Length: 630
Image 1 (cartoon, rainbow, N blue to C red):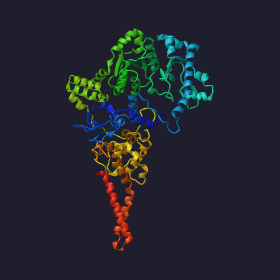
Image 2 (cartoon, rainbow, N blue to C red):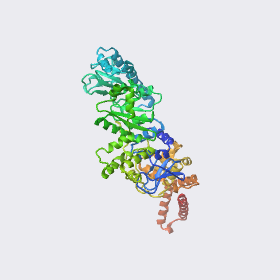
Image 3 (tube, helix red, strand yellow):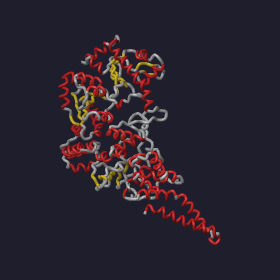
Image 4 (cartoon, rainbow, N blue to C red):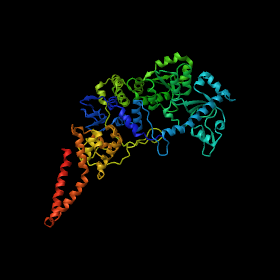
């Protein structure tokens, strides 16, 4: 179970990324004074009202009220959930996303220590299977099969191939002599315990393919059946050390064999990877029974600029290829390439390379079609593009895919290609490109994996605040925001967002008597800035992302025109003092009103003097309160 993403990591990530670069890859920005501007990608407009502030690392639209930091933008524009957006941003900087333990979980060091016995055990299991391939009395079936597929002993040793003998308890007898060892074997998925309590080997009468992580540790196995058992290929279940959606079979061996990688090929089977390596194609990997995912592709693109997908040419192969294309689109930054190789129907990479050798297969690779060709060929299936209706339908079907491409030269060229294929003017096509304003819902922060993904501390776990200025709520921020500040707390928050380091001038305790919603938010912001004085505007927006408070902070951050160019520190101090005096002022006003209702003739000279003093105090405080908003 993955835990929370640490808040400190999120702050560090936002500190490292440049929001201008993040947004400019998706929406072309133009310099406008000290900021950058563009037409807002979140609502339809003719003149730019979308502003990006490079100093404070946030964006804001004066037309619809959309605003936030780099992480917010990636979530909204790429339509990603929180954990995927974090992975996206982290991947662009080469950072790996850590996880905090949940209650009862171990911390990373403890988890690493607790996992060591599992890695050590899996290495023993791998050695056991390799030994069985060499010495078991029934291993000749496996050896004959491997030789029949053209594999040498050398390549079998390189990939650590092994043999799980027939029988229900071979591995259990060899490595599970104690209760503790059996429990560990169950934990790593090598033994199965059924509902009746019976324990037996998961893999039986199969050729075994060890699956290694990027450090070369055995984390799982794939098994190819030799008899009539089903399924033909069986993988280890997901465990504490194995997550199939993040791993590629053979990637460790690819990195060990190639110092410099120009491309990585993704095929469908273990035997394809090994057969290709046998014939000198040493850059092939395979997914582990899952479709190619963005996580797979980000891992590949960190190592090389090109990925080639190799699939059977039948209908199933083309469907798998198109799923890979959909996963690749958001990753297609300038300088990256994806191509698709379709083999003749009924032939897999193993067959192709054994039939023609390395040179023949590399010739086939040279004919792999680029992503753009495969995409456009796919969307025109069943359409008559010689007709106006066919070309119109092609545009309509292609645009949703092109919109997923990150901003850049490649994206522009794709639109030009679509314009050429449909006969539309590029300018007309670009007008169609802008999608309608999204209909948003509150995110549930669930990842697409098998576990629940929690937001980090501060992201979405604060109660909504019914602010009197009716700040735009998430899912409703496509409304023109109300200008200005409705109260002193909002004025102070705007100053803090503009210049967070001024928090050092005031203690959060000054607001202990403030009990309204905006005052409570101001107190929490001050407390955070005292704990983390290095926090930026972007970090503050991140802490309250997805909440009513976060919407208010986005709105206030966008009101730069109301912030003075000089004297910010003094204005903040004056505003805070006036705000701190409000509770006492309310008491004074109540007492004054009470005395006003009393018959003045019946009031003693002492009470009259007290009334004059209280009125003077009220006047002084009113003057001080109004000063910051002048």
